[in-house]
Length: 158
Image (tube, rainbow, N blue to C red):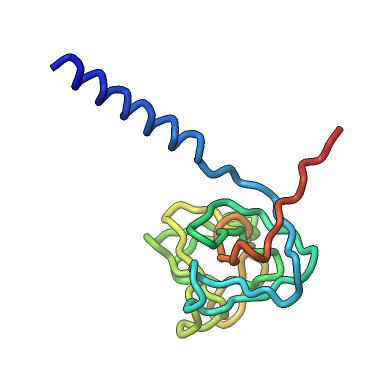
């Protein structure tokens, strides 16, 4: 009985260290070619939300099989309905007051959903259009790029 427990403990410890060693670490990547599609999900069946070009930099935050999850670049416009946010006194920030608020690619209820924001999330307002706020989505909304189009940028040396 003691041998079985020892062997089981050994395999559990080995599995733990294997997962720790293979944990993903975010990094800055560089696009290797022009017209690389950024998609809503990690496969070619998801819609393309923008394209990136050679030497564009992206923050890679996760991976799934042959795909990297990236923070969307600043050039992406993102919109939320004015009905579900409360503008704060400075008029530049607003707070989401609904659960799972849809962030859309255009200021239109029928446009594609880029992602969702949790209740309480603070957002920066850039403009108002058709009862939608254009927001700064940096760090809030993500896209996916096939790994073959990204190379890790070497860390800066001091």
